[in-house]
Image (tube, one colour):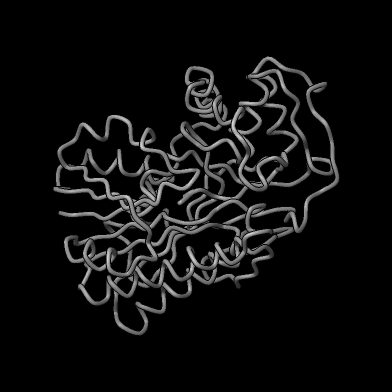
Length: 340
């Protein structure tokens, strides 16, 4: 595998993938390119910095000169970098289009010119839009309903166009909702966990009936590595967790783990365009050997315990001026990136 460039590698999902791939004997070098926006943090890479294989570059994926230089020094790319929070996309859609679409095009163009051997573009199940029943296969129509999901759907199409037009060996992964240690406290699990650990209330939209599929971040990273190593160029691979849960049921689990009761929960009107249900068929990824390993309840307890043991990583955020849209407690289930 040799030299791997990871965009958004200081974010939630990206940092877990970096630490995973650093352990691979056939990887000689891992370079993280990250703009260190609000959700990116050097600390997410932790002991990864002890590895002589790891190099960190502070920069933007829209910087064509920087991207061209880095691409010339690597053989493989895993692209996590993205704006990822649904509510933020309501007021900053242009930022999402710039980073997610133009940034992906900048990377794909450089990968094409430098003959990159493998390129994995990391996306989300939200591009399929809501499904009241059944599960979306990779051939399902793209029907995003919010600016975030629309920007990711556009980025998917741009990435795949480089395979069809130029033969650039790009694969796309689409994951369901990720959770795990180190996630920035704006998505529902880290947001609710940190608020409940502080003894603060949490807010459920409507009746808490929205259904999401939950995937531990390490299982997602396992799937992404499989696609990087064995995926067929030009193909899309759905990566789900097998655990469907309403937001109300998820809240009940978090209340139990945090030692709180339903008095801590307030109900508010639903947010704009809050898709009722997402669901994916992951048969294609399973053929590569993809098998989620983490039990959801055990993984959720482990995640809350990480926040309980690491208040220095999230408590200061609750005392700082909140970035745009974070002041609203939402049930947004968008991915990081997880830029990525």
